[in-house]
Length: 118
Image 1 (cartoon, rainbow, N blue to C red):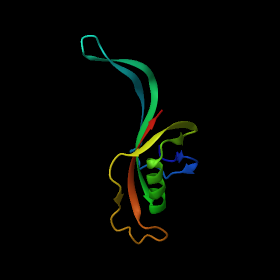
Image 2 (tube, one colour):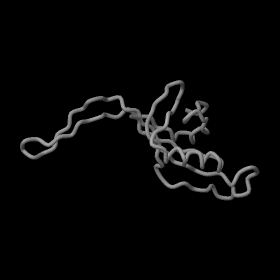
Image 3 (spheres, one colour):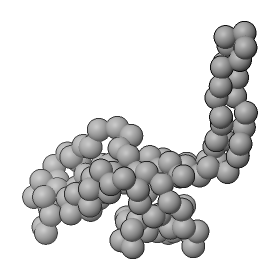
Image 4 (tube, one colour):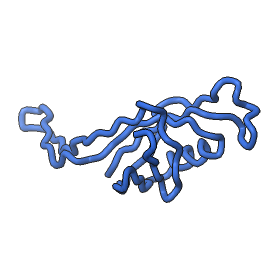
C-alpha cells in the first residue's frame, strides 16, 4: 500500500508503516436467543469494511489522528473508495526514540489505528 494515501475527513494522512495496513471485509450479524436458551446468529451482510494500520507521523498529524479517533464517525478514502465508520486507537501512541528535537515538530510518533466501517 506504500504510495497510496489515506484521506480521513479530507485530510491526507501519512503512509502507513510498510506492511502494517491490513484491510478486511467483516460480517454483520443479528444475534438472538433460541427457544432452547442458546444463542444463534444470522449473517446479514459480508461487506463491512475494516482496516488496521500503524502510522509514523509528526506531532501535528498525531494530534489530528487522536482527534479523529474521538469523533463519532469519519469518512476515509483509500485508493479512490470512500467509507464511513469509526476510527479508534488500536494500541499505545509512542514517541520514536531520539526524535524530540526534530525541526518543526515535537518529535516523531507511532500511532496504531483501527477503522470499522458502518
